[in-house]
Length: 476
Image (tube, rainbow, N blue to C red; front, top):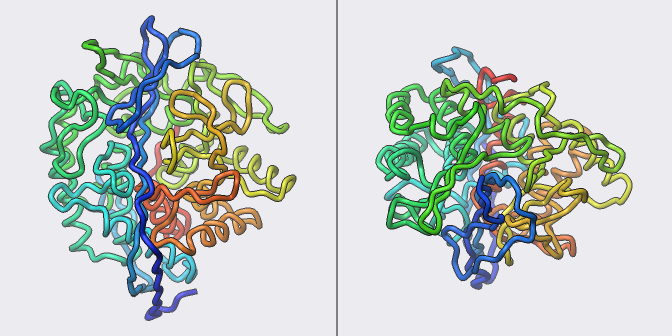
């Protein structure tokens, strides 16, 4: 354990070479008669391909980003560990949370400092926005939520000062206040981190639509911002009042928009896990999301003899991510759809039977197709990694550092210890936290915002005595 004045010095020097210039793309799910196709908004050197899924009722799925450029730097760590208190004067609560930084191990502090360097290196000072992937100057609302989370976590962990955190948050919120909206309604799917303007395809008309899922996650983190820093309440209110949030909700569930080929498509968005997690952001904003939590469009399957709910609609991406984010950001939820315990036991069983650590999650990858959904179950097959268009990925990523570390702070047993040590080992030779490990044991070095943010937020959660970041939690 770290004492109050422990000084740690790490030198990590390695040759830097340009690895990959990646494309940013997303899968489009829409309610029309045309067949499903992945939507490569913001894509670089990526051509659109027809999806072989049969034409059916199509709905929109979430963003996918990913370039990867290696990092090289020598930095001295100056890590402080002590006991501090934060008074959460939120609009909904007035609760004092005691943070204990002494229960964070030396190796975990090293991870925190590595993660912090990602944000030091990749923030664009003009906008306050951090690149979604190292060297790729674009971001989504999902990634801005990760940006806010990392900033608050860095302050809580005393790796930046309150003055620095407030300045960074002010830059982000100012950009959110002024950025052009798609059709003057809601944030576009993607923005330039350098200018704060819409990027990707159709950027000459303020973008190509919005992701209701991404906006939902950002709403959660804007609420957390208000709880942690009430002086930003007015600024957050200005932002959300600009947004016509009711357009992202139809029939009490999430709907996204995509503009392509001179036509706009408005379609249901979100699958089991992702849908319920993001819908809570809209609930916090006062919208009725009742139909996001009903059991329609679900079935039960057995994956390695463990029963799990699946979504029966098309492109039913099923990863561990939303369940880990739910636990850390919003808290325990005993609703029928929250399968965190079963998913954890499934991965644990797989490890006990094979002696191989697998943690399936969505992640940026440093090879084509640049982003993968590593599905626990997908169209009748378990443990299947796919692109955003549903195409199987060869030599997939089988271990996600961000989700493995999140699980390691949520659970406490031999398996969670193994996950923690694996993330530490996977990160040993990198200046920031790499994304994960491929099936052939090669590292996935697509350095990205979501991996490094979740490491920091997980440590913040741990320092809070495993209390969710948002207080109180929303239950459904």
